[in-house]
Structure formats: C-alpha cells, structure tokens
Length: 471
Image (cartoon, rainbow, N blue to C red; front, side, top):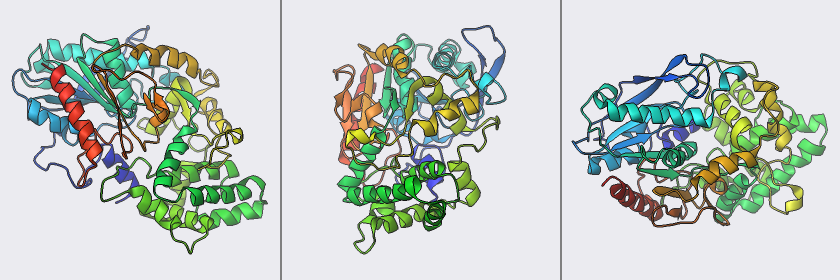
C-alpha cells in the first residue's frame, strides 16, 4: 500500500484501507453545504459554504448526534462510515455527521490561501462554525440532516489529533450545545521547540531494538551535512536517493521520510515502524548509515515518490507564492505559525538526549517560512505562552471530556497525557487514559485485525462514557 494512501486510511480518510472494517457500514456519499460567514466576530459578513456528510443509517428517534471533523485534512465519507463513532452509532442509534474545517478541502471562506485570506483561520472562527452548525441542526434538523431528528438530541463531539483539540474546545466553550467530547491524541499544549516528537519516536525505536543504531545513522548524516564538503553532501544525497537540496532542506526531508510510519497503528501482529525502519537496522551485516539508506529508499519506493514530489516535500522555497485552495499543508503551516508552534525540531545539544533527526532541523528551518509564506504581519516566534494561557487553560475543570493518547504517540507530549505525567488531572467525569503500546489516535480509527487489548479497553471506557453523556 502506498504510504500516503495508508496514512490517510489510518486517519479515516481514504478508500481501500486495512482489514477490519465492517463491510456492512454503508457509504454516505452525498455532500451537503452549510452557509457560514467569513468572520463571525468582525465586519466581513460575506458567506461561504461549509461541506459536510451525514450518515443516518443507524439513527432512531431519541438517538444522539455524533459530530466529527477531519480537522487538518480534507473531508471524505470515511469520517461518517469508517471510524469508531460510526461503530458506536450502531449500538446507540446515533446519527453521524462529519463537517469539514474552514480552509481545508472544499470549505474555503475565501478562494485562496494567501496570508490576507488566512487571517480568518482563527480558533474562534473555527469553533463558531461548528457551533453555528449544531444550533441550526437542533432547531431545523430536517433542513440540515434531510431526515427527522429530535430537536432535543444530545450531541457528542469526536476528534483525533488536531480535531481532538476541536472536540475538547467545543465542550469547554459550548457546554449547552455539546454534552461530551472524545479527544484522542489531541495536541492541546503548545511548545515552540517540540523536540519531544522525536523522543517519542525514539521510544518506539528502542522498544523494537534499533534506537541506538538509528541515532548513530543520524550522527553520520550530520557529519556530512554540517561539516562535509559540497561533494560529500552530493554523494550522501545520492546514497540516500534524495534530490540535491541545501543541507538544511535535505535534513528536513530526511526527517519527514524517516518518521513517515510513526503514526501507523500497532497491532499484536504488525508494527509498521519495525517493518519499514527497524528491520533494516536490526540486520547485523549493515552499518547504521547503510541501514538508514535502505529505510529511506524503501519509503520513497513504497510511496512511488518522484524527484519532483521529493523536492516539493523538502524544498522550503517550494510553493511560497502558491495560494491555491485545498493545500492542507499550507493551512496547517499557518496554524503552526500563528497558533501553537509545535515545530518538530532536534533536541538542543545541551539536553544530552539522543537525536533521531539532524541538528539542522531547528527553529531556523521552520520559522522564516512563516513570513515568507504569509507575510510580515505574522509575528515570529509564535507566542505559545499566550496560546496555552487562553486555549489550554480553558479546559481546566471542564467535565465530560475523555482524553486519550498512545504511549508510543509521537504527539504524546503535546497532549494532556504526557510521558512525564498528566497536564490536567484525570477525574471520573473527564478521565485521562494512556493506551499502552499504541500510536496516534488508534482508539478512534478503524478497528484493526489483531487489535491491541489496550486499544479495545480505551474504546470500552469511551463508549461507556458516551452512553452516560447521552442519557
């Protein structure tokens, strides 16, 4: 399976996914559109159309409404017919609706992704989009859902990854509209240098027996990229099968390629990180740099990447003035620049931590692009302290939020359930659960063949909470 297709599939966004999907769940292929203002809180009252899908197959009178958003992805029908909320809908008589996030996919308040347009990509506007939808759905359900739904239906918001942020914030900001939220792998806590990303990846590598050799390979790469001659750099790029870019852009590209499988689900029978990374390093006949080269080339081959696609992935100057819509990476980059940071950097040398990406992948790799892409009005660095004070602290004391995170999740230390302890207290009304051995948002993805017992347990706990919330 191609890597891009696989990762989208894991997130519930593609057809032709892993085994384990209930084939009896019908597709809900009709897109609907809901009018929203460009700016809920300002003077731009022009309207745009927000895309959504509905699956009412399992709805019965008196049943709840389950709201889902793909967050930083484009919306597909998989969000209403191929994720855990749809499985839960079958036993709770629920209607499932998935709503596309503003400035992603086909849901664009303005028809370009320039900095002046993306000023309307704010947390406040995004949350009010969903709140406005839910209000209309509850007051005029037949108009919104094209089927009769009780105006008193309880609403639960589900989300994994950034959409988990949305779920938690919706419960915190609109408690009368949203009865509960399931926030899986929600990266709610902002960090400027998010070097913990690779430390979680390293923990996964360590569990599979290849962390030390992988780190040695990174040191060998840096010996060339940082201190080698121009000819040495070209030779390394050829060895690894990547195009000739600047040393820093090469480092960034390699970081993205080597961690591409880090969010893939782990089962009792399969670990994609082992198959696609550690299997090469655990071959005793290969030097670390040679194992690294094989792993990088395998990722490139499995995804059918070309030199052009690799340049697009690695060249930080690529597409700076491409403002076309439906570029999820561009919208997501803007959110990092203006909201929460979480730049995936190498740890500082003073930390003494092992490195699983080049030391060249630092803030100077990420931050300059904020103004190059979106204009000088974007402040550098992003004020993550202000973000946390407003958006993380708003969750304190809020009931009916279920926080989950995998112990091998690369985003774990941006979630409530960090590797060093919970950032919010776990309580009976808002429990925090770490899913042992799991990666990113496994509990809300598709059920896997040979699923981990810990994932099943996380779902069982969450299902019971949802049943309680909708009573």
